[in-house]
Amino acid sequence: MKKALKKAGLFVSMVGLMSMSLVGCAKKTECELCGETKKCNEYEASYGGETETGWFCDDCADQMEALMNLGGGTFKKK
Image (cartoon, rainbow, N blue to C red; front, top):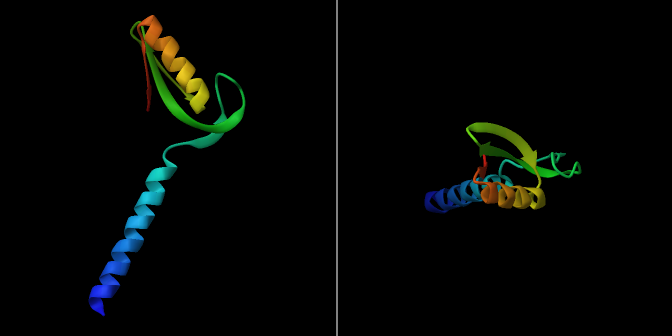
């Protein structure tokens, strides 16, 4: 009985942790590039010694990453 209870507790804990990790840091806010209200993540852009942060949706983040890499900067999820 104790063994089954331990397994059930472990399973529930594992499912809880997995579901929390899938949520990530995304929040529903206005994207700084397209202006639409979507699930966005905070990104950090560095170029020429200056660093700025902003909230971007996945589509715009891909575009910004390509532009920053082309110009010699970095763009990464914070």
